[in-house]
Amino acid sequence: MKPHAAAASALAVLFLLIAASVGAATLTKAHHALSSYGFPAGLLPSSVRSYTINSTTDVFSVDLGSTCKITLPPDNYLATYSKVITGKIVDGKIADLDGIKVRALFRNWAITGIRASDDDLVFEVGMVTAKYPKKSFVEAPYCEGSKPAAAEI
Ligand SMILES: *[C@@H]1O[C@H](CO)[C@@H](O)[C@H](O)[C@H]1NC(C)=O
Image 1 (spheres, protein in one colour):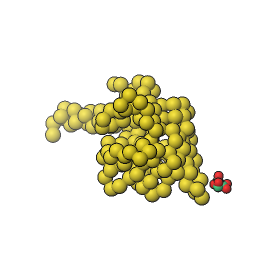
Image 2: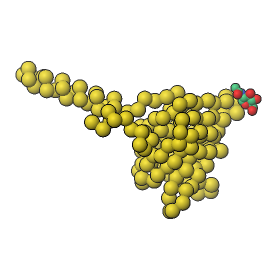
Image 3: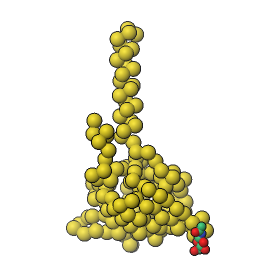
Image 4: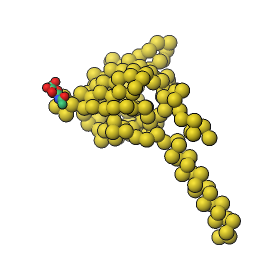
């Protein structure tokens, strides 16, 4: 490889690393906990402030610091996360969920539970369910309006 070609490819690698580091938000304890229960980290925005779980009751609480709006993949529904999200989590199943609403068909629907299978997530809105591939939720999204300026490069 000629010297200038080597320099060019080193630069390319550097740009890729920078792009990867500004594009992916730092994962918190809450995101890692989600993964350990079989859920993708991208179910929670990057703005997690604190997370607690009661190991006796499996009841968790996630504090996002403020409400958070996210456009959910893959259908671009607008989701609103309350400042505090609570629920009960066990392997592959989140129940009694409180704090996540999705705008669809001109109204807000509270997501009451989420189940995880090998490749899919099943969102429960009361008795109604909707299935989406897990791979749409790999990266923890930024809340709308709070994306760091560096990520705009
Ligand atoms: C967990 O929940 C149980 C039952 O409500 C309660 O008695 C216990 O104090 C809680 N543990 C913690 C660490 O909060």
